[in-house]
Image (tube, rainbow, N blue to C red):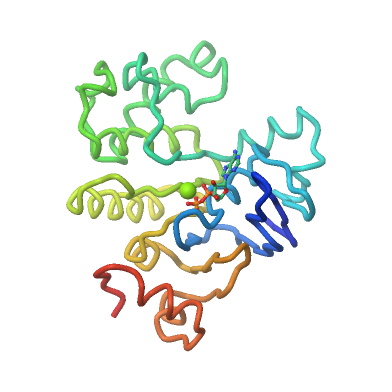
Length: 248
Ligand SMILES: Nc1ncnc2c1ncn2[C@@H]1O[C@H](COP(=O)(O)OP(=O)(O)O)[C@@H](O)[C@H]1O
Ligand SMILES: [Mg+2]
């Protein structure tokens, strides 16, 4: 479980998070939606200790991230896979090399056979064939790169998967493929997922529960149905402003 309480963060002299309180439950898929620039990525980075809060706390499985020592942070990070915005693959590594980065250090030296099997299995989960293992990211389409980034996130069988804007930068067809893929992965893989997105379709399609982050706080929270039907003005304003979305 991840518990965020009264999280405050000012960046560049501007308050970005102004008291975010949020619990992520075991096994759920939670979407954090909100306009661009509202602090969604900043919030995710607090979960893995890439940012320290000015005030408030982030507790992962009972351990406070801001006050954790290096060893405790390393342990927390070993439980969390992070699919960065724009895939963030290593250009100079093959797909195989990129996938293995998702495993703990030394794993492949100790368990060579399992290591190769994990790579093949992760690729199968994202509907890619073994022939891509020897390719470089530059030899893949944007949609395939995104699949590899997701495969790298699931290869380590971590308890949490954080997706930062998984559909952004893809054409509509690939964006739909990736959404369907994440839905498939969340059924097949035993993990708790957080999806940060400004894409309303993506949030409604994937989430068990959605929160709206806006103006530094969680303005609303509910199931997709509850969010669709709410009279909450912040949600209505956000949904009305979203271009050509199917939320009906
Ligand atoms: N490292 C940083 N230093 C200064 N400002 C930052 C930094 N990271 C993010 N910000 C600012 O924080 C705000 C929220 O950013 P971000 O979390 O990336 O938004 P989004 O909701 O689109 O993910 C933006 O105004 C951004 O410019
Ligand atoms: Mg972002």
